Image (cartoon, rainbow, N blue to C red):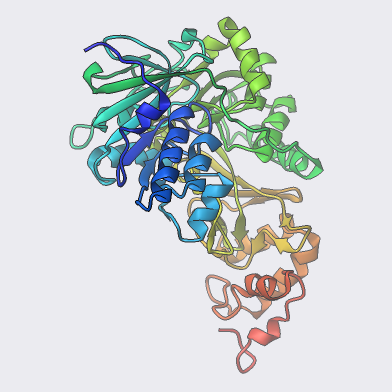
Amino acid sequence: MGLRFITADEAASYVNNGDTVGFSGFTPAGAVKAVPQAIANRAIAEHNAGRPFKIGMITGASTGDSLDGSLARAEAVLFRTPYQSNADLRKLINEGKADYFDSHLSTVAQNLRYGFLGKMHVGIIEACDISADGEIVLTTGVGISPSICKVAEKIIIELNHYHPKSLRGMHDIHIVADPPNRREIPIYKPSDRAGETVIKVNPDKIVGIVETNLPDEVGEFSKTDEITEKIGENVAEFLSSELEKGRIPSSFLPIQSGVGNIANAVLGALGRNKSIPDFEMYTEVIQDSVIELMKEGRVRFASGCSLTVSQNKLKEIYDNLNYFHPRILLRPQEITNNPEVARRIGIISINTALEADLCGNVNSTNVMGQKMMNGIGGSGDFTRNAYISIFTCPSVAKNGKISTIVPMVSHVDHNEHSVQVIITEYGVADLRAKSPQKKAEEIINNCVHPDYRQQLRDYLRICDTAHTPQSLSAAFAMHLHFLQTGDMRGIDWNKYLFNGKCC
């Protein structure tokens, strides 16, 4: 049977209430756009007719508004996994109108293949080229697309002519064997290849191709400011010091960096610091700052899961593809985030915390321990297996009314055994080889905002002289005080003592 071109509405007719659907993309890069909107329109029509219509959604990570936003606004989400960042979807999840379960991104594809996520009825994949024999060339994001194509009963392709067919060769498509037949992944430096340049499927599984010409819906990240710039400088100076002390090889190590304005500031500072050699990246998201450093020769090579860049930057890449093509490799997240590879090649991980506590535990996901922000993403994949694991955050939020350093985090994503370094605009807390008491002192002295230093020192003083300086009665007092007054400052720790003692 030959490849069949259909409309987005026809494609949506293959998706039924209760189906589990896999979507391509990793961030809005490579995410499908036309078919999800058609599915959302169908859901709205079904709801108006008094009939139920919701689908399970499995993606690589966050996606664009045409996907997550459209289906959330149509209240067509039965469940969603893993990472997400759309405001409408976040609202739906936090109101309990859609089930959401968070996952380390490295595990999603294998859990899909293991059957842990149930049957996948339809896979919807964005491509820049497809052949009659089922060779699919992806666009700017890989995510879990190879495993979606492997397990989905039916496949729909969005053939997006916005992206050139000459992207062929920029992808490294490798699916590891499932246990008990899994072998090592043959990647020993970021530029090594492990697989194929295309996804290969039985063309009979492809029920239709929807042609589009739509850019990725990557929004502009917030501009760096004085605080994020200082955080970046502190990271660069710390790594420069580690080089000088001989604790990092003189040739340096691959960098993994999260996404956003802090990540951009960190990468910019690394690029400006002349004591740091030109370096390579082994990361999830390749963003604008990486491309700028690549043009300057500071980033020699970047391996990632997606090209999450602004439209102007993507046009620049496409206009100069002969330069960028051999310097960028896009892989499935099962490979970019693979713990074995991360530990073997010795990545330096730099991720962002919502909050950290005095023992070094980090919360990446839940505001006040209850409201989901985005998800853990790949930070855990990298942090636990990094050569050096770093978490960055501004010292305060909400105009100083929230301290990002608290006695005990309200939700734990990365525990104290995985977090080696915490960096704010005030300095660096090196937690390696330190007891819990010494960690607390290091964090307060180097990372906490001046408005909160004495308050947190007073907290330590009310704690029993146990191995871990925590008070069961007062550990969440700063969170509670904020919920009651709108400000974490002004705690009277004596209110949390019983018979003059902490408990």
